[in-house]
Image (tube, rainbow, N blue to C red; front, side, top):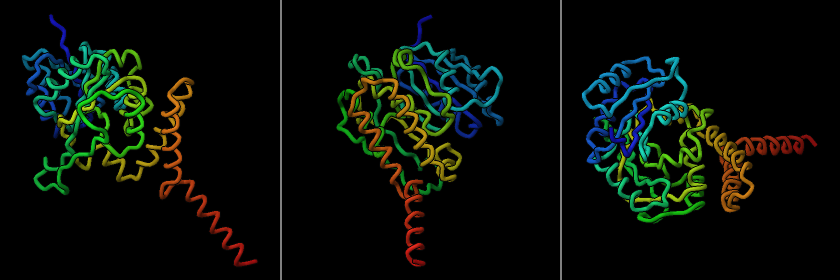
Length: 299
């Protein structure tokens, strides 16, 4: 049997409302040489039944799998499980609540075939509110932060990722050479949710050229039960980002010859985070100033 060129990995956890739509957007791709690995991360709703039904179709390209113990292991471990079963030359990820546009894989494979130095390619993602009958906000796109239609060598896009102000590689948007995973390893399983994708993309953008395209390839569904929405509601975003930045600093310590621009960019972001409104450093400074003021009043 001919091996697929693209391995698509869709992880899911209690995603019965959206999973079938995500899978249908893979089946609808104009590029046909793919396999789809549906990885169950310990779901307790009807999504495993949906995934098994989709895998039982006559389309042999779709497979269902779960962790050996059937438990929840987190997003990184689930993506890594999919990677152990992937056989394609390229790897793409599609979360269970997102969808692809029909030419996503064809256009991205064409780019990587034309750009042999590129370790990955990514483009624009629609921030998708209009899937709902009563969207709270209009759809929009983040700025790419760089000119599209060209290859970028490290560490330029790494610095863009650290600044966190523009569209950078995401799991629903990028197409990645499998050899890059073989070189760098997969996802850091200590990151079960927030910033779990950024640990891999930071490593990738430190060592591999990436092609940035201006075309729209994915729709990132906005809803209250998503991992990012729940993190924002809990007020966890800043803590999660600080953990990621500290992890990255430890990672760079293992590479004494890493580009000094990359180290400088990381140090700037750590300082900016420490000085951000509501940060621990500013709270401590505020408490010290209040203490000084109280002491002055009673002097």
